[in-house]
Length: 127
Image (cartoon, rainbow, N blue to C red; front, side, top):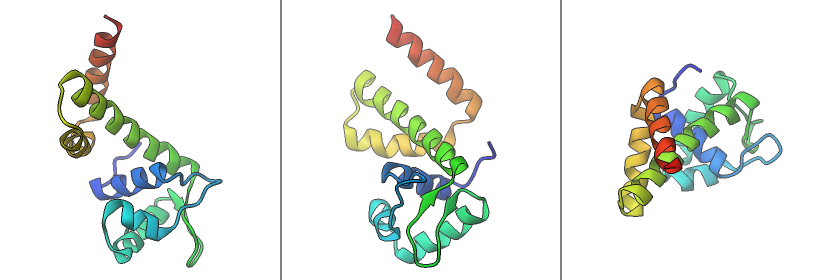
C-alpha cells in the first residue's frame, strides 16, 4: 500500500471512525468537526482522496469510502488504537496525551518497525 500524507491518512481515519463505509455515508461537516478543520479543508482533502480512488462523493453529497479507502483507513485506525492501548494500559500515560502522541506515532513509524513493535507487544500480552 503506497503511503499517503499524514493529513490524508487523518481524513481517512476520521471517515472510518464516523462510519463512512460503502453503505454508511458521512457528511463533510461531520469530518470537519471531528478533525476541527474548515469545510474548505475537508473539500481539498476529499479531492485528493477521490483522485486516489479512496472515497466517493457526488457533487454536494455525502462521503463514502471505496473498498481500498476503507482498507487504508482501517489500517491507520488499527495502528492508532494499538499504540493508544499500549501507551495507556502498559505505560500508564493519560488518555489525552496518549491519543495525541499515538496519532503522531502511527504516521511516523515505518511498516517494518510497526510490525516488529506490534509482534513484541502481542508477545507481552501472551506472557
